[in-house]
Image (cartoon, rainbow, N blue to C red; front, side, top):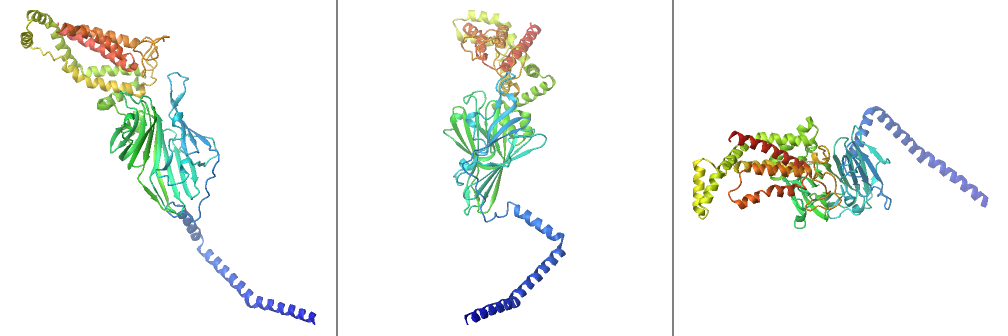
Length: 559
């Protein structure tokens, strides 16, 4: 009986299975086959149109304007060791570090630290300024971990040579909240300009509302230089702003419409350039006596969840060369500032460079430039020297009057002025033309001191650098009033001798005490010029020689 029940259960179960297959499963399978056939026929009819639509869909999904996928990207591994990579161009070698995705070293190939041919190449980023340049963040630290982020490079290569076409290096970092930061550097083969594109994609559930910042840093030479400016600067509201280092503590921030911000020394500069003029703030910090950090703080930006924003910049690390800056554009040429006499100094610099292209010796170029200025000012010089010659011829008569009225100062002055009127002599005639020439002198002075063209530029013999004082031999002991190296300042001594000769050719002042004092002027100038760059001393020496020749000509003509 139990077996019959078991057999009946098996039969009934089999009947249920068969009926279920016939009434339910087979109709469903038939319907699926029919649907698949219909889909294939539809796909076959659409053909290439379907492929095109698929491509367009993928391209649209890749655009940054669309919202990000709902899932967060994988955070960048924490605690790993940062890599560095070198980029070589014909102009420089730059080292980039994954820690912060910054420029960690920057060496110029065409400039050296010293005049020696085997001297070390010029470093734009000194050890003090490492891990700072192109560092990116937010003023309010609204992206956790970004301050100490270690990015991932998109290449396994350790050295990339930029030759013929630009090269792109990408860094990427993702924090635990899903915020992705990409920093793209683009290097050009023949320019000191570097492109920097910062892309921030917010995959976190909350919006980012903060002020983006980018930092630069540079070690400067003499922050207290009275001749040329060294320190932070910016082209703001169409005007060059130069902030003296000692003023930073009182005014650490400047706001306005910025074209660029920068830090400069006598010959080189570091500049950060937004792609477009932007309303921003430049914040400055003096880290040590000779190092400055500047950061560009952009206006507050909101990046909603699922959105992406790109911040494009350019950076310039290089020499303050007028032609190179003009080629780079972005109004970088305005960083070369010769002060009040800028309007004269820049044309002088251009003329000197044109002369150098014909005669490749900056010492000779300075001599020719000095001669050209003397030719232009020749009429004024003639008038001055003629007046001085007339005064010299009047000296015997003035001496007689001084003896005659030595006890009556008022009468002496009246008779002296009457004598000038009688012979139609203007006692100030020799001074006024000289005053007119002073702006030319100061313009040349500033230009010759600051022009990078004279840095390590040889003249002849022992003068192998027109940007530093000339020294023949080197003493093993300290010399008063002289900065090291200690040696014979030949150019300066010859210049002092020409000044003494010129003084002897000029009429002595009426007051004997003043006359004696004036004879000390060549000695005083020699001591002052003893530490001036050789290029400046050469200009003053050549100017004196031409002035002596012109003065001698006038004295002979009107003897």
